[in-house]
Structures are given as structure tokens and as C-alpha cells.
Length: 122
Image (cartoon, rainbow, N blue to C red; front, side, top):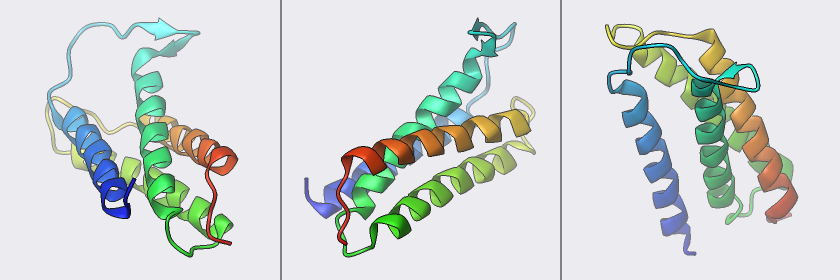
């Protein structure tokens, strides 16, 4: 995949997360999986995919391995914080530290996947 397509993939995943995070949330009780709300699993999965896409895009350059992994994690987790802040003024959404934690865990999982399977420049 060309570097341009890698970055388009990052933009696509980030865009899907943004839209899904800002659309009105469904009401009612939240289902759980293993005692954790299904929404937290969705956060973890979405941000893991974003971290993988970002790590994949970053690995194409001459960036050292550790720098690329730290950057992928930091940008992905930071994006989660930004999204939660964007939800603050929305009547149909709520700012949640739990969501930010799930986002950061997803970023860590995605970064670990990239660390295991991607090759960086040096």
C-alpha cells in the first residue's frame, strides 16, 4: 500500500470514530460483556484500529521504531481525549473519563499489535 493510501486509511478510521462519537447516542441501558459496558469495548476496538492504521502509516518513513510506536500511541490516545472534549457541549453525549481510559487502552493494544507485526525504518 502506498504511503498516501496508508494516510487515507488513518483519515477514514479517524473520521468514522469522529462521526460515531458525535452522533446522538441511543438511550436505554448499556449491555455488558465480561462485566464491562459494551460501549467501552467499542471504544477499545475503535482506537485499537486507529492505532494500527496510524502505526502502519508511520512505519513507512525513516522514523525509528520506538519513536513511531510512541507517536502512534500518543496521537491515538490524544485523539480520544479530543473527542471526549468535543462531546462536552452536546446534549446527547457525555464527557467520560471511562471512555478516555478505554480509548487509551485501545491505543495501547493497537500499538502493541503494530510493535509485533510492523517493521520500522531503523
